[in-house]
Amino acid sequence: MKAFTLVFALLFAGPLSGQASIEGRWDTGEQRSIVEISAIPKGLEGTIISSNEPRLVGKKNLRNLKKVGEHWEGELYAFKRQRWFDLKIEERGDQLELDIRVGFFSTQRTWTRLTTFEQP
Image (cartoon, rainbow, N blue to C red; front, side, top):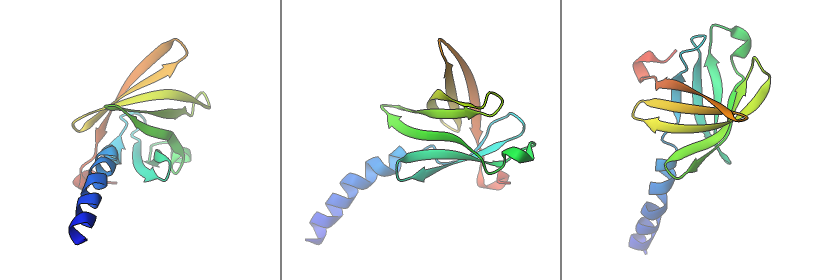
């Protein structure tokens, strides 16, 4: 019975742990902001934990992040435009490549993972 439980746990733990690979703290490069991506029951979300603009600290800027094949999809909040935009994220080692879709147009951004030594 213990062997069956172990095999069952290993089968399902692999996909779940791999799914959260973008969790952590990311330097957005803009306004010197740092976003923390963390798991919630429905997927992942991102919250600004540090910024040159104090009014943004503590605000959610990523929501509904779900793994779709080899990339992530969800929404990013643009505070200047005060609306949510569709988002595709691809992980490239210690960088996230964000493709933000605005109607027929899109813009790209790159975020860099912070190491434990760089945490704010």
